[in-house]
Image (cartoon, rainbow, N blue to C red; front, side, top):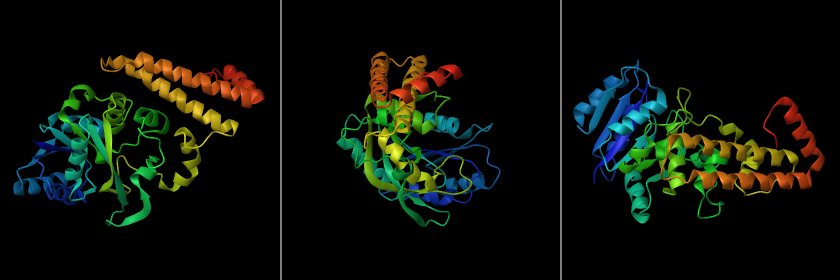
Length: 316
């Protein structure tokens, strides 16, 4: 069994050495760390080459053009040769048993093609600065959700709950995730496809420290809005019933997005997805919600539908 890490860098001189050392210090050693640098202008590559001179597991690829995060991860993953591929950001810290505990989830779930985990949130000085975890920040309320989880429904309505920095995939996944969608971030794209295949699993443990800082390309930047959004997110996840007309309309909007996402997937011609049935089921879900809105809020429903028609928006 060969273990790979796909790591993308861009001006990461401040944290990259600590991150790579945390990867090299795993209880189960990785065989290669494929680092794709996206034209850093600081000392990132210099630091990488120093680390490479000390450990031959590190493979450095310097991009000829700046690919940005999603396409850079596509490249890094494509270059990995391992049976399992761990995705890694440049600025986090892995706990010593991350690889071991992730592989244990794969072993416990033979159908798994991808495994992600929770994470603590740390600041620039490595201090845990909040009692929230990364799952709190993306509203993955795992403890409360009905099992087995319908990951596609969660992702399509709630937004992505799989942080790429915690994700590991089997090598076979490369055959259908590449090329990445231009409409999605890399982790959302991978998570969506694995969710539709029902091969996405997770560890409940916090296996890394996910760093929050001002120079992130992509990251959790709305921690102060968690409490404000919780009520509507709970409605989306089916943990609370909609009560006001605005609740129903918000949920309807999310269902529209779910249906749109399914329709967009048609252009990729995935032969392992029965998208027609999923779109029909999504349509039924929309019809049921519209019926409830007509019953509980008949006047508001009619007025809103009329306004939407006049403005040329999609009708309720």
